[in-house]
Image 1: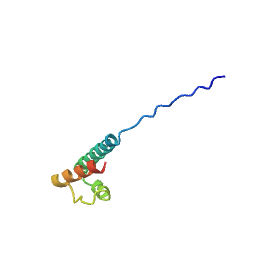
Image 2: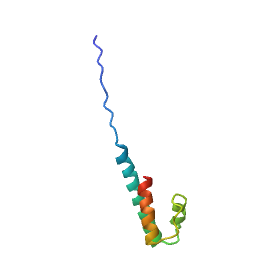
Image 3: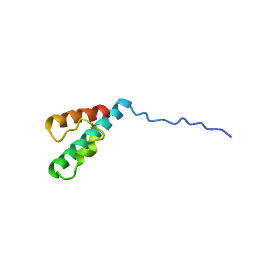
Image 4: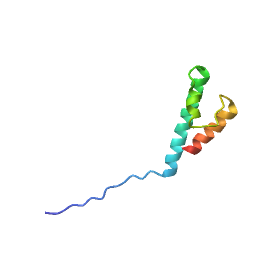
Length: 75
């Protein structure tokens, strides 16, 4: 009776690609949230993002650009 040994292949995910994919996901999610906040101003989505990104002061172009860069870096 022969014993058959098999080597299992492990798929390795490059950590840099994983980080960038999370960063892009967060940036897209933040952009979608800000668009919803801009259209429906009574939803107060900005206050929930303020817990994660303390620099949020409201909806402005400078604040948006800073927060998108931060979400990419946090990813």
